[in-house]
Image 1: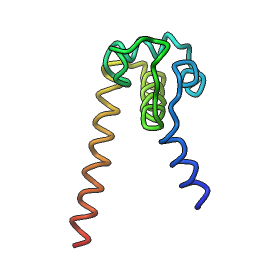
Image 2 (image 1 turned 135 degrees about the vertical axis):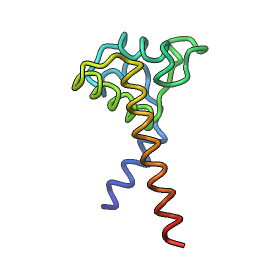
Image 3 (image 1 turned 90 degrees about the vertical axis):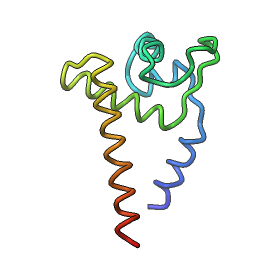
Image 4 (image 1 turned 120 degrees about the horizontal axis):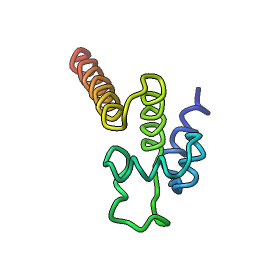
Length: 102
């Protein structure tokens, strides 16, 4: 269990390049570029492409976006909405758990 938390912590501190993120998701870099420019992944639009960096949370989001797109043949906007709603549900459940513990 401890090694899992250490790996997660290191990943959160890691900055992946465009190519590394694409490789980790099993997609072409163009897929990542398209999603960044659409505003559903990362916040690198104003930065030169070669300088784009992605953290662990963006890797997880990219994988969730890809899974929704593939499993449900969804476009990037619909996939982003589903991922956003899932993230919000997790945040609300965590908040409820904290409030319920009081």
